[in-house]
Image (cartoon, rainbow, N blue to C red; front, side):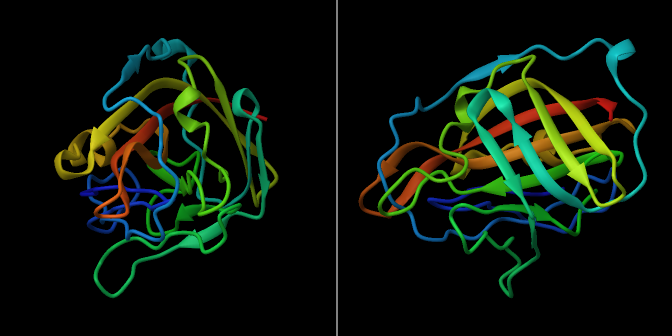
Length: 210
């Protein structure tokens, strides 16, 4: 997937359309940028789970719920995110909502499924305000319409300048492994452009289903 992502307070920036386990994705549009972030400009934490801990990829099934216990996220009814006319991925209209990029793999399918949400609004923290606090080993649970829950284990949390986004790393092939990308805005808030300078990206691998 070829993508540049800026999720909320801003949004997700993405740049192509993504098919299961392919390497392309599109930029995300900038919605309203708001409160100043106190996050660091660059951070990397990386500790992938061992191969024997990985679960087999699941068939396609749309996500309907997201739970991340470590940062108190519990959302029902994920919204679909498509592409705008300019080729950028839409952002959730509701700052409390979480969106799934519907032209990519569904969470649990082989490839990098993408979920995005806002970091804040003009007046308060939003759903992914604490996303950068996640650590390797934390669990992300995605409920699916087929009744299964795809359980992912975080293995990396990284932050990138929006003008130097590593498209191949974020949206590239996963070797048939089901992975998840959680994306929001991060870094410093630029008062001149009214947007965040960075994107925070959480990487996770499917380790079981329940």
